[in-house]
Image: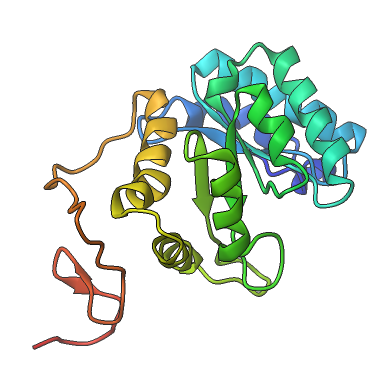
Length: 223
């Protein structure tokens, strides 16, 4: 939970910073975020630094948004602010990366996040090429269901593309499950249900007939 950088420029939202500590103390909050930069304004500078200080105070990891414009300069500035905050690099996930920005984040020791979209930011095939270059360590892939053209099942498409490219089911499980669990588990608050170990010989990708605890993505009764 956090004050998004886009809203950081709205003075009406500043009071969120005053009540945020009450929520960061709650057991089910596993990170501070999404925080960071949108347009790299002075207001965003202040809100970003304030929330990183809260992450340090509450011993929580931070999910950081990088700007959509002038991305490389914005990402470098993001990393400078993170270093100044005193929050450990391993407790920071820098999101919305691409081929231009992944190298500087990899060198920083922060986790690398990629938002996969149908038309913008990152697609599944580019994502696989980045994994080839940089490996699977500290890599987290996400999708979206927001106000623009997005597809929450793009993570599934990444899994399919990884398998088509020769990655194993265990590799897919690491990127799409174990890595996020490791990152957010640093909060000490991530509670997961006891489940059987994932099948590593074959990966059954989510489809119309797939279920989780008896439920599927389809509506209505199932026979």
